[in-house]
Length: 118
Image (tube, rainbow, N blue to C red):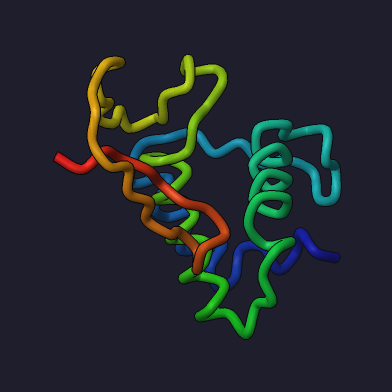
């Protein structure tokens, strides 16, 4: 039974942190993908936009990739729901500005962020 081992290891540490923060923990059923749509959508985005394009060489490599992707997702990636902005607002060039556009590779060149040179 999977639920029986939940209290041991990382589950107990997480549950203790939740209690200290005075948050109410909501446990979803094991292998019930429709119970937590937000998490399922996040996992799908991570797979489609990051992990499906890279050969992961181990846990450390996966953590580095996900950390770098999270930084890109929150600060550089355009989101339709935010009118083309990112969750962490970024500086935008004025519509008539001129200057060379420089690109910075993200995730080894899988994505790029662009900005005008000052």
